[in-house]
Length: 270
Image (cartoon, rainbow, N blue to C red; front, side, top):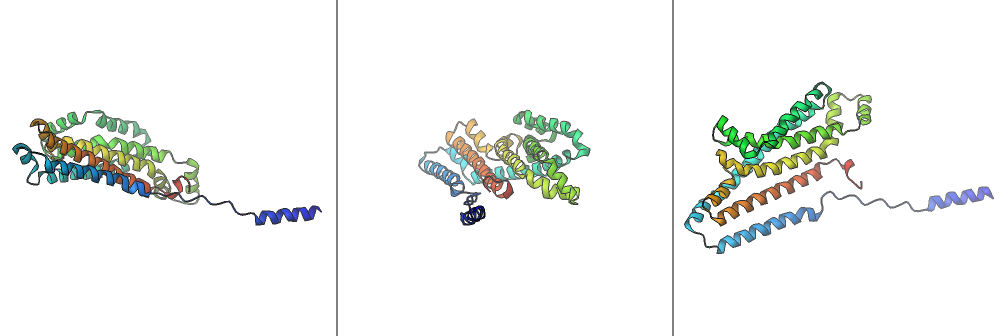
């Protein structure tokens, strides 16, 4: 009887349906893809319609005509892209270097300099650079790089230090070289934190690029300062709306990159 009972139990176990597999986690939802772009399109369309029926005086018309708006926007994009590029090629390799055993003692010194760059008011830092390097785009770019390097550097160091030492030891145990461990284990696991720092730096650069006008760097800050100095609200509003819209767009694109480049094994629900 016991044999018959055990056989029936085994049969029940074999016939029992397997538990349902959890649904795969969707990286990018349609809400994520469409909400912010639709919102920005609506804001820009409303702004354009308002300018179409607005009664602009000669000063406002001169400030916005002749392709000056598109020129300022393009300069702003250039400042943001160039400064972020240099932030990445400086901060990420430096963060990797400071997590190696031979250079860990230099981490407090490097972090102190990075904190000094962001602790200094951006307009004051730009003024010092203009005095030192003269008026031009170079001064604005160096100030933006110094201001945005901290989040990328600190997140790179934090992302690499957060890796499980047992996992790294296992990778070395199967014969991987130090470079192989870095490229195939440490960096992929540190990608979420590193990308979060890059996203922060991008938004910071969009904001600080508005101050480039004080150093002769151009950008949307030209419209904002023109609107303030001439007391023309339409010019000020347009410059502000374009700056905010660009910052939101950059943050949205960075969030998509953060989702798409994150290793699948780190997603919740997989």
